[in-house]
Length: 357
Ligand SMILES: CC(C)(COP(=O)(O)OP(=O)(O)OC[C@H]1O[C@@H](n2cnc3c(N)ncnc32)[C@H](O)[C@@H]1OP(=O)(O)O)[C@@H](O)C(=O)NCCC(=O)NCCS
Image (cartoon, rainbow, N blue to C red; front, side, top):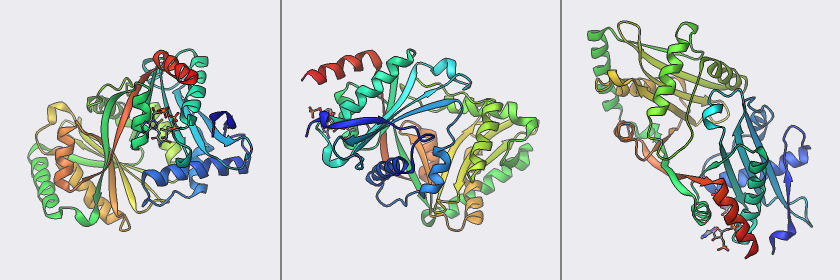
């Protein structure tokens, strides 16, 4: 087998035939199964809603790989995501692209991954503004490939899971009780919403971005920034697809927002909840607000979604305060992953020299 016998075709879901869209799903599902064999696949029709409604502020370039002789047999995939003007963090992140590559298992170590990488690099050069790539994976061969191409680890993290059957409910009751007592003493209230109320959206998005930035981000070059406009856009896009986005906040006596937590429920994956960001503003830390928010969230999930089996969350392995809360709740590491950083100029040279060998 030689990489020469394979062709890499641009895949644009908005223009692709049903047959080509099927090939895309075939390879993505193969990848999903390799990463997590026990996780049920998202129904294709649901996934399609996301695929056919690209975010207006980012561009996802995609490629599919076929044997030249057998154009019906998909064997690889690659993509490159970049932000577009209009994204709130475009200016700070316009030099960064996120790529991923997948090669079907029995064709690995034959140069196909490198061939896809060359196409990605060529697109990146054409855009004329990228200097850095980030690429994350939880698969061993991916670590090897990215290390071979001199990627450095920006951040190590893990998907952590809390199975409802393993929740420490007695401890959760204690956290909730302590939170309520402190709330009574200090005049703190807890509120929840789907759509962020207009009167607090400016303040909320400020604390949201601030919390995002305070997470250990390692050597990640990406700078998070969320605005009221980006929140409204995301609220609409997720709601249109049937995704329920719950947020809970605490407010101090003077109505200042002091803490937040959020989680997502998707009707097509009713066995799981995705836990998003949790944060307490610096000046309000150390009073049990984080524990209260997380405990309260668990009680609500249990009541609202009786079919949920587990809550999934991604945390950096460096995030000691969050991991400490999560571990006491019963969260356990499910799948570690690494996010790499690669410099375009250096990568370009390495990939070219690989071609010559
Ligand atoms: C990562 C992946 C795309 C690489 O595809 P591939 O076609 O095997 O890559 P190549 O053959 O071009 O490998 C290039 C070099 O990377 C290194 N490499 C790749 N896989 C390796 C492995 N499993 N062990 C050790 N080195 C490895 C080798 O040095 C290889 O060159 P060599 O075979 O001449 O020594 C493939 O393993 C895969 O699909 N993994 C799962 C998805 C994933 O994790 N993707 C993230 C990376 S973007």
